[in-house]
Length: 238
Image (cartoon, rainbow, N blue to C red; front, side, top):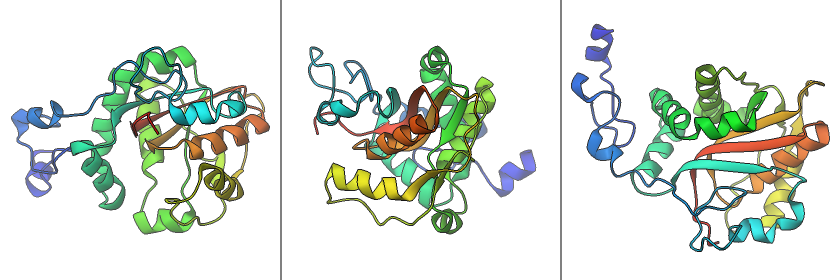
């Protein structure tokens, strides 16, 4: 291990700079700058909201007719900004798979109690299209789900959801159009008959379109409860 650290020195998952042995897995100064999500938060998706008297963020309020048809609740660790934004982008696009352990440990430390209360029987990573997975070399949601599942004793199952077609970037289109495009690209590959409570896993939650579609497909397949966690989320004011 010492030789490996000399050849491939560990890097801080937040700034990408080399770590010394004394610093552990992350620079303290970087860790202290993380944009943690605090209360009040949307009681459904977990986004931070400005007014504690409000139950839902703007996106969940707009999609309230779909409550119960897709996902039931969700949580994230950080706001998608500052040093964690660069970290997650490097994780996805620069092949920094070594960041997985840090992310998984933070999920367990900060969301582990909430996850256990939901009693998921499987962690389901949001799938990538096979071509996109080949381009990146891995599915970051799958790595995260596997690492968290191993630490919490919850099986990861990446065989349930399947992305059957390539979708172009969804920026600049309405939420309804996003959900329509995603619904055409997602399908169930195999769903165990005895599976009832599941938890979706992804790196970033933005408008909620992906979770809405995945949740609806899973419930149509037989899931009674669908929850999710992500590393990051956007602001809850739209």
